[in-house]
Image 1: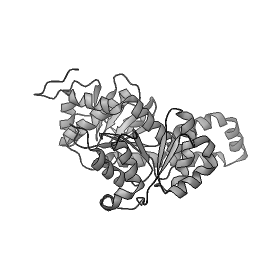
Image 2: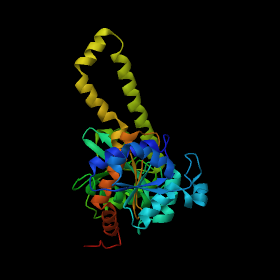
Image 3: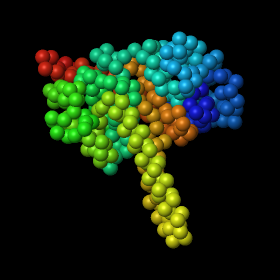
Image 4: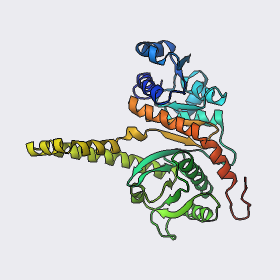
Length: 336
């Protein structure tokens, strides 16, 4: 029931999802009458794959997480997370209030043992393909141990979901030199150099390394990560706007755009944020994916795709195994 457009985009996204994932079933939590009305025209396609569960209330997009927690047990968001906690569902996808979704998920699902705090991870396009960046908003301030946890979750995700056998990991910093940065990133770097994780620790990277694809996993605190994310999204929109204006400037420009339509369409697809929509809440005892609140059906369907991929890859088992095998100084790595 969340998101800027409400449940209409969710139902439209399900029409795509049922085709992409023929073995997956879906539970819709929310206002039963509203959801049934939206499902009406698609009933033949979705009736055997979708179950509607009535929830009396929903979390508002501007609601404080603390308030949502106090009154949240009758909301569609709480009920959706509860279905994962009970084992009825394996994943939950929501376009609703991010803070409330994280708070409710932590209360119900709890954090994986050994992980200090969950992080929000995002997939970014790069020159080499794509990389995973975390944290992008859950933890404004982080110490060295938390950054190491993010590295563990990020490299586990890169191996399990992205299929990278031995991912490279970098710490986002104000420079690549070892003497730069605050104590948290310096200490985290030393700890990561001493681990026995199935990864290659690259060291420090800078902001432009993200788009270059210098590493497969970018680790940073939520404050820096969220600013970097919003800056990248804004830059992509600016480039598209400039390009659109330039191609409409003259008859020759329009003709050139027509001749280059194939290449321009490919560029538009690469810059389309809907293709990688969805922030993954890593570190919880359950798979939770947060879709962008302003997305459309195509974007929400991409978030569903990511949630299904995470469940099928057994991402949490990978995180648990890797966290147990972190070989810190004074500790023995756990062999399995």
